[in-house]
Every structure is written in structure tokens, then in C-alpha cells.
Length: 196
Image (cartoon, rainbow, N blue to C red; front, side, top):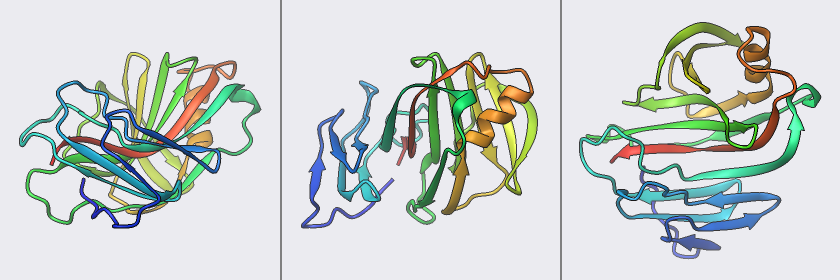
């Protein structure tokens, strides 16, 4: 993913795990894979940020997940009344070799259960296989599963909209995949990047 780095950004960093606390959120470079190429994240706030990332051509494994993160102190899924993210994002238009997607990443039970909501996919395929289809606030998703990993994959790409994490978790509960007693660790909105 590429976003021109503003000359006067309030914060920027090329450190692999750089993090900036802003407004109760964390802007996080999250370049967690040791084989990842160079990446610089910048932000004026948790609501306005971007990343310039260079990842190996043809790579399909996720190397980085630059994101905005909100941490939670083991809040039970049953107590959630509303959990959603509004977003407007862009990736390079018609970029040859781009393999990335924009997605929420919701972690439960101290990183033992992962639930993603993919909204803008350029070449990625979730792990596992399709276990069902969900309609959430009028949007149609294929639901994928691999062990304790779940991905709600939107049937088309969107660069602006709203993700509904609480409703997605409710779907998983109602279909017996997770429990209402599961607890929320954190919620991210960002981009998984494999190749640029």
C-alpha cells in the first residue's frame, strides 16, 4: 500500500513495531514478519493516517498489518451493545503486483480467537474454507474458517463504509462458533500487505 507521506505529519516512523497513542487509540506500524520489506507509517491522528510499504513482488504471505488499534480489558462479547468502525481508505489504483486487503482484525480471549472483516481485497485469500454466508446491515459476506480464525469477506470491494464487528461476533455466536463468554482483547482496522 502506498500513501504519500506528508512533509509535516504529526508522527511518522519506520520502526517495525512503532506505535503512537492518540485519542485513546494506537496507530501501529505492525511490521511483524521478519522477512518484511521497508515500511513507513505516518499519522496526523488516529482518524487520518497512511503507510508507504515496499514488499517483495509476487509474495502472497502477509508481511505487515499497519493499523489503528483499540485495546479492551477482557470485555465479554455478551456485554457488547455496539462495536463498529467507520472507514474511508484507498490503496494504489490498478497497482500491478499489489496483494493486500483492508480489514478489521478483532482478537478475542487473549489472542486465541481472531475474527477479520475484509472490505477491500486485492489478491488475498483467507485461510481455511467457507463455512457460511452472512448478511450484516445489508452487506453480503462469505464467512471463512481455519481453526479459531474467522474471516467475513465482503462480496465486493468498498473504500468507504462501516464495519459491524459486534454484529459479526453475534453471527458467530448464533451459529455456535464462539461463545458469549468470550472476551474482547482488541480491535484493529488496517491493511494486511503481502506484496506491493
